[in-house]
Length: 378
Image (tube, rainbow, N blue to C red; front, side):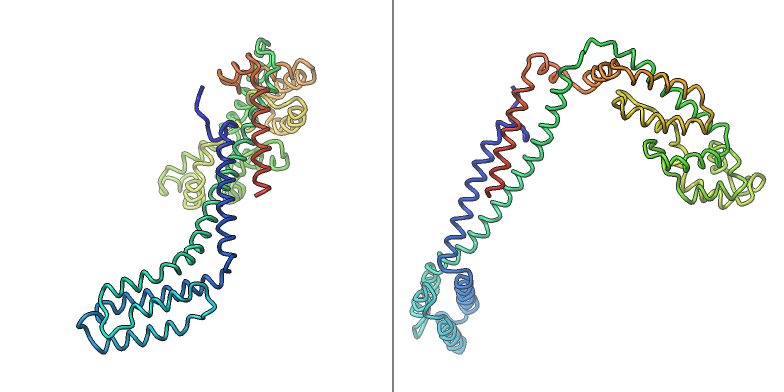
């Protein structure tokens, strides 16, 4: 059996434990700060930072036989700092100890070390602010992991529901009875568009594509406005699309013999070459497996209207063969079998065969429920 993946329900328990631990750490850290209050601890941290900054600044110049003037200045600043520390602050006496360690006629490096050590009780308190921030960051990180896992479980549940739905499909059904007419129509639809591109003017074909925007179930490509305007306003629009593409590769001097504005053609065709080269009838096809019967029937009405403008009678006839089949109960049975064959991999087919899909789906739903509840509580 493969190891637990990010969407494996069996791995949710570990994530729930991490979420619980992170939440408890955050709660404890916030309570530790609340014991004294954020403002109080921040004032302490500022005084501590100032005290340590003085030590760093004057350690070389004020110790031993250093500059006496620097020593006097240092002593004055220490006294000012200690004076600023309110007596009601917790561990305020640590600053008195800091002052005592430095209150000598001559201070040494060891005195500076003792002064630093005197601030340790203050550090113990101000570290609570850092721990609160770290605990909050850690909790946010675990929560993000949990939310990602929730999304993964949603995807897994949707996948298992699909597998469960397809589990009832008849994998031995004669899907060729559906595939053959669908493929026959798709081929005819592509041929109709290919013929139109080769034989009709670019003005007609691109105008036809633009008119198809009125049919929401026909996903026709959007014609670039500049290209549509060009073929409507210039004589070159009388040429088929392949000819326009050929002209786009020719020199300006040669194009002068064919079009009224060679520069405009080169500019417009060049900017839209990829669009023109990609034009085909793919957007008119049904694809495999085809849509559900009700969707297919609605879409077929719009496809017939689109194909009629190309006089594509063969494609229309073949489409009607498919829609006639879609009106029968047999259509959905064949389509479900086609979906099962197309969408289920070997492992999923095995799960369908041994009946483990329902249990896996229940486990995934349970894991999602537990994780969603934990996130809500948090």
